[in-house]
Length: 252
Ligand SMILES: [Fe+2]
Ligand SMILES: [Fe+2]
Image 1 (cartoon, rainbow, N blue to C red):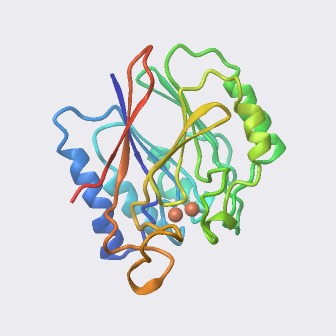
Image 2: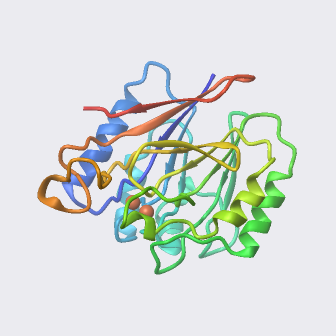
């Protein structure tokens, strides 16, 4: 059994609120009787991309298990590489921060879908070609692709402006590849669907949750609920030869 704790969107900003919402997750993970095999955080790590925010996150993610991180639209490559250097293994400097990470027999291809200065996501032809080449390499164990921006609409008038705009190109690269699942964040909602014929699993937003238009509005009427919506994460459980199972957890 191989267990992934999939976190997303802590938006660390120096505030006690952000810190305590992430800590509800990390405290829960530290109390596991058998530690997870890997922790993955799919972007929007820091809210303002300050080195001090990344340093705070780096300290909070010391969990005695492998930790993987990738950037979201709130992150900036240089301070991210500087502040979270212990958790990143990406060639080159600056943008993009692509990674191929092997953990316990599983391979994680971590794709940087961010566009400097923008909230939507995009993959350049070079990034798509890199991803295609990596996914053609032979692998024995489970294979995951992870990135920040989902490529499909969520039926939300604001979030749907900030999606990955390279969906067709990405689908062409992913379709037919021997992937176990695709993992993402950004929309601050736990979500399970399919994309390119593959399981596509989104972790809840740790920092907040935007209710969909047909749901009860957020307290105060704003975009997001950061009071009644609990911080959450996904547990992906892989066993060879069996479908991936995902549980969503919202620690009190
Ligand atoms: Fe976010
Ligand atoms: Fe985001």
